[in-house]
Length: 114
Length: 368
Ligand SMILES: Nc1ncnc2c1ncn2[C@@H]1O[C@H](COP(=O)(O)OP(=O)(O)OP(=O)(O)O)[C@@H](O)[C@H]1O
Ligand SMILES: [Mg+2]
Ligand SMILES: [Zn+2]
Image (cartoon, protein in one colour):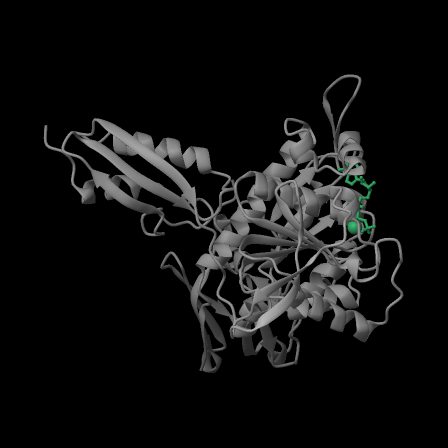
């Protein structure tokens, strides 16, 4: 049986601190730095496709603009779409992905870590 | 011995956690009509969110055991029922399909992967569990539901009373295998392949959706055409979908062919219910063992890579094809076969996924 999918009750983007906060259904709360989220972007451009490395595999640093959170939108009932200062907004961050970013023990076999 | 209070019984039941929703069954409102008699007999109704609930039997046993273990209880009667809930929906969606609670699209990245076979068996499995189910073949280019179900007649027109009391003419779905069936192929006649252009397709689908008299349905399964063409796009945009299940073969998964379809639905805000792998393993006719020529776990890994739930693997089974060719879903025709069992398990997973969604309110988003 699958473990229940994590689900948020509220999502706060605090631009001044470049931080995203999520309060989950089970009452727990996680905070994420913009840079953490930007480096975890799951989009094809960042992660690579069909066995090829993505952009984030090839670089060491990202300019400040790239890691500055600007927007957050809900995607269906399962994910958030995050926008960054550089205009990059193709990453769909599933709740499960976000939860495991904050607490890697939460899911058994997520391999988002770089 | 004193009999237990309502509160004690509910506390005992509150130790049962729904594995998909992550909350206890009392909080979720699943326990109804609790009655405790002076003799110590306890009766209640356990209302599931789908009759195809994958943990139905486990819940029943747990409920009997936990309540039965309370001091003073002389007997426990648990009546298992189900009430499929509708997701939160906008008004437009309500109007297009007024009596339909959950709408599930079945899609694929390319043709010939067994999408229609999956759609028919998913519908039949849900109906077999006790749900009211409709199946819409939205593949105007190559409708196959009539052939797969043997429902080949032309549907009749019926007069029904509309929302404002006026009479409306509607298409009455055909019935077979406990399902209500409608194929968009009836728009053209079953033997003519359609050569329609984009805008016409979209208009015809929209019109068609409101022209069918489905009545009350727990689930409407929609067999989409393969790929991401106009028809799939229109359904995804105009029909209030609870979600979409994507069918793929092991080869497609290796080549990420399902990705494009998935991305289209995500862009349109249709939740992916998950990934179904078809024709990935088989029961060897000579030795009777399961053979997995593509290895184990490929679909789970693909689902994880695509951030969607994994809904199950359907074996390559000549019986599935033979029954389909005869116009019978294998879940009804040969319910004990490996193929039928795989389809039923998949249907339960899909039903559970849709239940989860209808329970959840949208989170509050704040940008400061
Ligand atoms: N698990 C299976 N085992 C054996 N045969 C199967 C299985 N699934 C599908 N088939 C067979 O494969 C063929 C294609 O299946 P189906 O028509 O369901 O695919 P489809 O994806 O709907 O195709 P289309 O793109 O034409 O709509 C049919 O002959 C069907 O009987
Ligand atoms: Mg088909
Ligand atoms: Zn990215």
